[in-house]
Image (cartoon, rainbow, N blue to C red; front, side, top):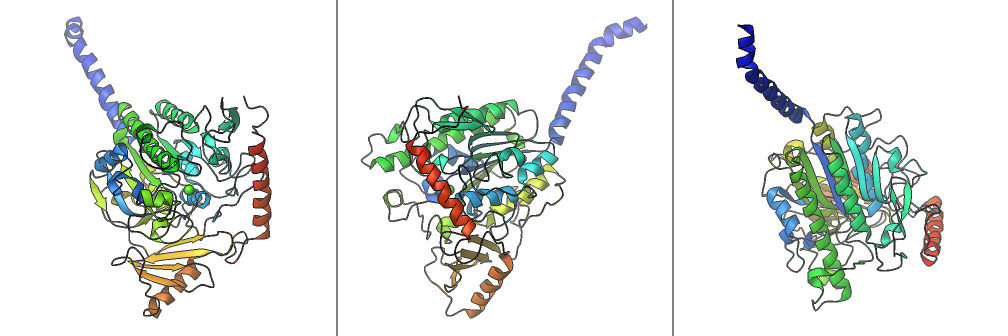
Length: 485
Ligand SMILES: [Ca+2]
């Protein structure tokens, strides 16, 4: 009887066992916290991308990403140059509070490091059991400093540590973690044989594939279309009646597009697209004036005023898409504002992390907003930036926007609802709004000896001067680190 039971029910038991395995793995997949990929394109402008109105440059993959996800019209960067913008994302602190508030060059290589005690989004990810990686351009501290990616929660790094080094697309070397390696056929002075983005993209895809079976957080800081606009293949723009710079620029944007297409296709192939939030955005809007060779040809400004290093909307507002099939609504175009420092608390909520001691953020979680809800209510957004001579500041509360181009300059007031091009300064007729802006500027700016509101600290000036000297010498001598192979 028993043998007969086993004989007949054996296949059933096997089936039940298999079914429990399948349902078990479904439960595991559901319990697994979602992956997070943050893609930051260096200097891309809203107006560069098809869905934002670009007619000449082709971006079919980004346009599809927007159609499969949500596009944001008023997504704000951390502040309007590379290092502090990355730091705002990485720390979840706005630029009046973040330890890095401007580009601060350090010799021989790297930028002002994030302090050891700062809790980064990568450390939060580690606390929740995630794998972490950064590809592309770091800019938050060299490997021998507290700001090294390897000391700030990143398991794997591949690319340029230093922003000055990243000016070349055909550099003599790059880093794999903190180990330098040589790029064949390059002298760092112009177009060579080995395109850095080719290697960086390959390393990124490889890491994705080998980390697909566990939760991961990736920061992909694509260096294109920033700086020298070096390309070895102009593709569909080769015969356009444009200047070389315009063709190179268009080819760079299209290269970002095809690399993003490969990333999203890889996530689909790996079957993890429905458990991965991908945000694509830019770090500081266009680096070109609307009247320049690039700005004019491609109509980058898109009706907004200003560009990189400024505090007007053309610098602060970024192209931005969120993509998470089945979770982030497809085809949504949203006008509500949010900012990079919101991504830290968003990630804390979606990962279920218990952040390490010392964690703080100026942001608000966007999770329900990303899923189709309303953006969180807040008092204001605040930005500052420390260029050479005077700190520039901006604030937004409701649809009011304040800009001050230096502490001794008058505060300007704009109504973004009726004047997104910031052409009609209302300061004279609205002293109440000027007063409110003044209050926000005072409250949001936390004094820091590294970042005075007037001028630059001596430490900053000396450090930057020394760093540029080394950079010029290294370029001239086609330098690569000893021991790189
Ligand atoms: Ca940039």
